[in-house]
Image (cartoon, rainbow, N blue to C red; front, side, top):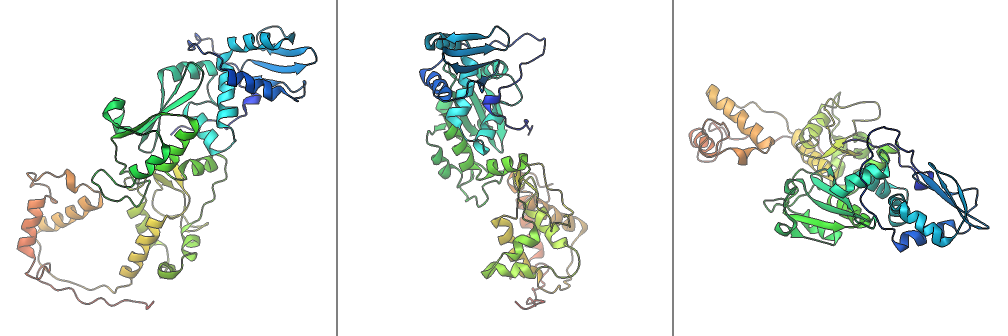
Length: 403
């Protein structure tokens, strides 16, 4: 996911594009009265030596009216309110762009940074962006596709949907207008199974929020992927507070306190196994930034997700609790016969289950080790009536350390 430059205030304006290429065709924009009123409000009580800056010009108030100072023309003084309205109407894209972020979006924080990032507001001129917004600017956020557009009044509108539904007409999808409706959409995957991890790549599609304003679009995204925008913004600002494995596990208590005992021996191989099992891109859309501790990195790649993971999540902690108990069992040696092909088949079955590929293997593909009929044949051949592999019963577990 590309990173824009740091968010800048609209008052500071943006540098004009020095490229000699043909300027993009800006859609016709009418200056809405609320945008003009916002300009007048911003000028009330403002120091005349501190003009309100837009892209390509600035406006200030003086004793004789208003001062209009274009970057590419002569400075005008004594401008009346009516004349100012006419001048700003001619520059409506720049004014409505200021109004959209300064007054509609407001605060300098994650929401503003995210909405500006959606249209590359810190890396392109108003003319370039408005021309692109007229066609629709598309951005990916996890499994979401967000399309930003602009109305003839300079208002931003957003279409939020599953990326798999790109190009599907709105009337062929379930339409929603309240961003909080997304809470129900993210609960289950396409097979109706509960999704304990909201950033798992299992988001079901078939729905759309086709016409959201800036604040509602942000709310919808944060409902689908909680805290991802906030952490993305903290990372951009160099303020991401990472809590590593050791620190997070030390905070566990109650039934999860047992995880703190899982540091037997030297090294952190067990944490590598946890990260490989739970934090791979195929399992989570976040990019793992936490390590074993401040001084010790894991030997597992953190992934390529767009938004950072700042600490082991509840799914990881819950899984680690179970594995802590299982790993406390003492190993046993079991002997049973397998042909070379059967050994490879067991390996194929484990790989297919771990990678979530079982549903992709057709019943007719008996060459696949994890094929259902081939697996049933292996069970019929190698399991006894009690379900023991090779007829060898499992010995009672003996744990190493008592809890």
